[in-house]
Image 1: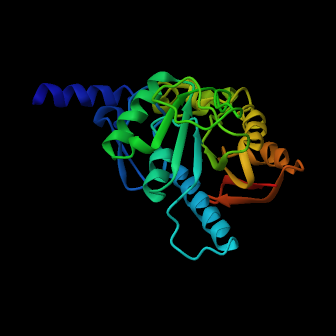
Image 2: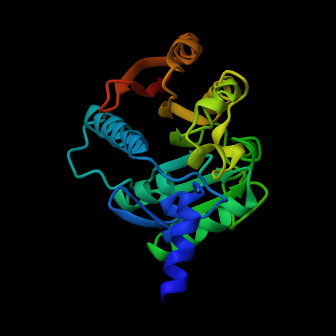
Image 3: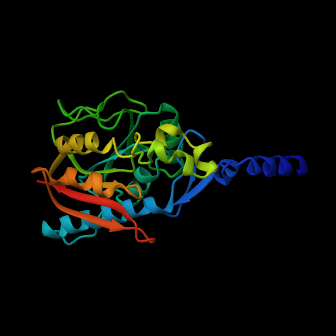
Length: 259
């Protein structure tokens, strides 16, 4: 009605994102629920999906398997899942894979679980409340983690793919952000310390412990993150390091393979 329409106009005029007014955002051809508890999925993050699938396909060809990539037998982790966009897109593209999705925010995990259910993949995505991979134990037998589970025990080096779009905006950049972002999206999903890349060292170290040999790590980068983050993959644990630019020519995705 007219009152609701003008109320929405007023909210937009105050800088509230359109996605919060509609409650939805499209990602990888999927309509996802978004709330103020999650980062609004961006088109740039679709490059994470593209690189992950390309790397998995290369690995499959290297192993001599010619059949279509279905994810059969694959264990995949999405770290900092937010709305669940990466985990759900990968679940759709890899219908036989098992996926673990972590987030430090229980509110975000609740949104992600609703999205997974809406897209009929909730039975294959295990949601874990965790800071990065800290509560994804690498000791003990594998077992499924339930929604909002506190831990998901795994054998050491159990993942074939770890993907993440971690917080990468520097707090020193906050004043330069559009108010739609600065005032309305969750700080915990935006800021990666003063410079924007303080989480990458821990994430890369934890990924090295959780990936199988030849396992793949795929990370989204901020516009100025590459010089600080790429040297972290110079360690002996990593090989086949590659950078993918987004459509604006900005280094957006950093990928590597576990030795």
